[in-house]
Amino acid sequence: MKQVVIGMDCGGTYTRCLVGDLQGNVLKMRTESGSNPFDIGMNASLKVIKDLYFSTVGEENFEVNHLCISSSGIDLLGKYNALRKTISMMLKIPMERLELFHDGVAALEGAFLGEDGILLISGTGSVVIGKKGNKIVKFGGWGHILGDEGSAYDMALEAIKIAIVSEEEKKKTALINKVKAHFKISNLRELLNIVYPCSPKFTIAGFSKDVIDCAKSRDEAALHVVNSTIKSLNRLLHMIISEIGVLPVALSGGLFSDEWFLQKFQMTNSYHFVKPALSSIIATYWMALGKPYDQTIVNKLRGKK
View 1 (cartoon, rainbow, N blue to C red):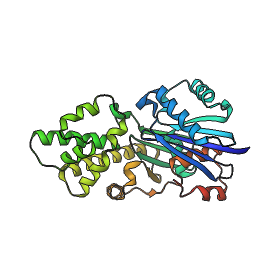
View 2: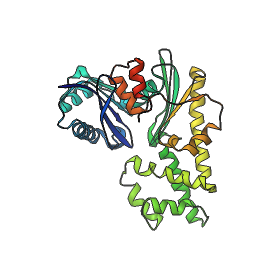
View 3: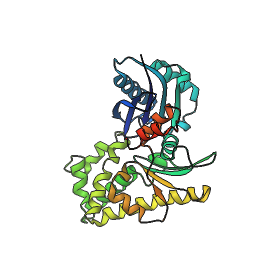
View 4: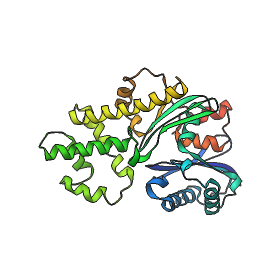
């Protein structure tokens, strides 16, 4: 029976499950829909985790040495041991082999391999988290109702609102047709049937790619939205640096995967940016391994997504 460790990264848009051996070799990885409990509810979140776990492990002859699950908002849920017990029973894994982490903490640890630094995340949601010595500080991460300025969701929603106002005021912007094409509608009024039945955040957040495409084409309205997003992200960085001082900054999340947006953001400030050592899912697997600093293992994990 092969000894394995498993990392699960439960984001707002995607949930990833990675199975690897004890030497840092990735054996299997699968991706499912988002499972943030604050987006879809705890029961639905647990179902995604269960289905993805068993579909990834499959019929393999694996003995799970350790499982780490990182998830948005997990530090706010409370009842940590009760949740661990529920997941332990659901996945048939002893509690002592199971750990839960906030996804920002896991990503931060992996980005700097446990060293001091700041991680700015702009994906479906937005948050900045930094570590200096034993001190971990976080700003943002308020969710799409109370905050998440600078996120893909925030960018997309603002652009949609501008498209609606522009059409009603008979102003021109490429965002109007982009909204119709993305959501497969012929009239913006049809958005009511998409937005208000409590659609998952990623349904709207996915439109951020179209907003960036419009901005690349110099559409004035889209550029305004992009610049507003960048301003919000810089605000997060200013706050955390005022709290823990100047440290290297790593960038993560879907918006920063666009090279044009990444460069545009970096040109608006003078922070020292570094590439995250490990991606979020690899970081969760690395934590499941016990955060080994063995150079052979670290080198295997660097560059993997």
